[in-house]
Image (cartoon, rainbow, N blue to C red):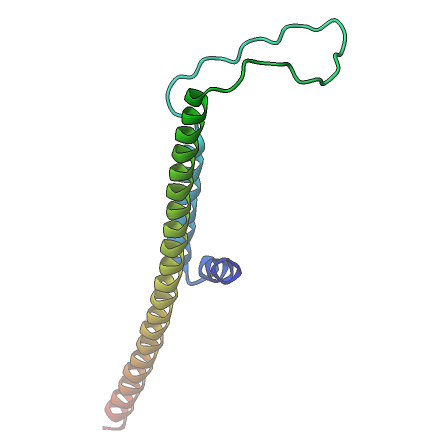
Length: 141
């Protein structure tokens, strides 16, 4: 949790091409999360509440006794709910794992980019030194 957030923040303030990619990825994930939270299908609007004349006491209304059919429906609904909960937990774990993998890969890319830039600056310095020596040799001849 906290380490992943720290790594994301570190990657977000990384070198220029890398930080833009991280921010775009995070924006994409936020949009996808928002879209997944929207309701699916058409749902009927809730029925209007009937106005009440006076507040009534919260006494339970006696209803018909529960039957075996009611218990079977409740058990079925409970099983469906538990299956949905397991699926949700699996998706959350999968997303957390994917995020931590992405953060690790971003860290590796950042390290490789730093190494390439360092190597390039060393090569540029060697080229400049070689050109300086050539110009000194030409001017001395």
